[in-house]
Amino acid sequence: MPTPAIFGALVGVTLQIYANAVRKVPVWRSPWEHAIWGGLGAAAFSYGAQKKADLEVEVKEMIAKRAELSKGPPRNLSE
Image 1 (spheres, rainbow, N blue to C red):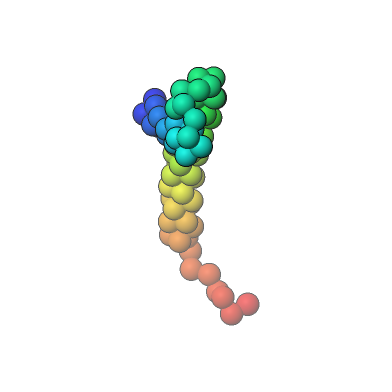
Image 2 (tube, rainbow, N blue to C red):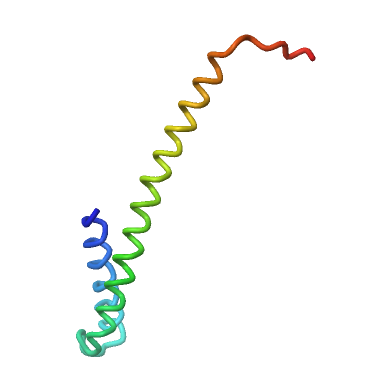
């Protein structure tokens, strides 16, 4: 899933540019910081997208299991 990684990298680089602008230093003062924040942003957004996909699969499995269990024989709940 390259889209979350690209978006995360853009967010990371933009965050560093904003931080430099707030401190009133040259925007591209330390280019290696932009690379680090871009990489961290890409990793975070990729992890989030993968986690979301995993949770969707897990929820579908839980719903299927719940539906299967509800089709079983009636149980006596008075015991």
